[in-house]
Image (cartoon, rainbow, N blue to C red; front, side, top):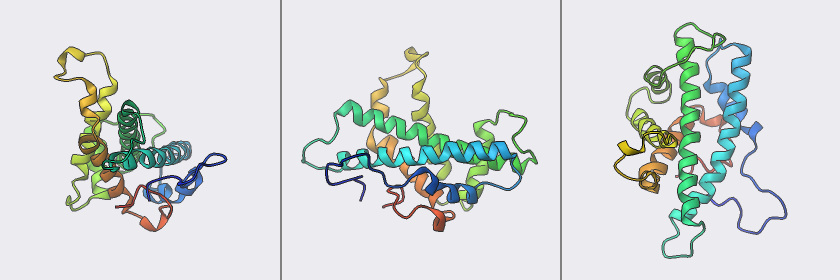
Length: 198
């Protein structure tokens, strides 16, 4: 179930906690990363994953409510989709960059910038080696949404950003990309997460 809770809670509620994600992230990262780089990456990604669970827990029931009452004010809904895409892209970038570093016999300590066209193939080789999941295509679509955070060239855009933050065109490929990642080392994915539910 995508809802975080059915009853009004006395305090905060959650699906998983950040530390639940450490095993999965650790298994996805290659050996040989600099200790500080590995530690920072695990910390960053585990917090992003927990935040994505909350966003999914609000986005999906609102989008799939049918003729039922709204769960979210529409601008909240679209902004949550945008934030989900930013988080999902960041996770892909982090894992892909780590993989690229080790493929190129680097450990990340030099803090070199790794371009999108470098890390994306590395990500796909690990998480979509046969290419049948269309992971690269989904990540590129999510990147297009993520890039809407830049407001410096609005005259070059055909429409306002809100049109790009739809459930079908933005959230669905981002969630699908996350599900592709979670198929690898799936035994280490927290069982209570809503990110892998079909």
